Length: 103
Image: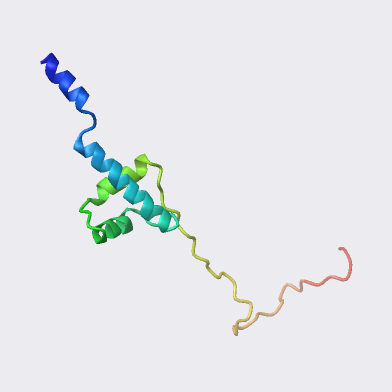
């Protein structure tokens, strides 16, 4: 029993750890080539094109453990259209929006 433990310890890293290290390098290359915008679904597609068969959950786990998180670009939304053709209502409250002097 004792010799088994020492044999296991002296063998070094297992295949899974070595695969994860190699896969992490590929994920980082893809991630930084995409200007940090790709998440795990897109990285999975790119890895499939490169010949790797990996689950999305494994990619997510490796990305999370290495601090890789995609940056989402905010979409610009126009909120005001000053040049519209809608009816402009009358000033029923008789408010002066361009006063000549203070109060």
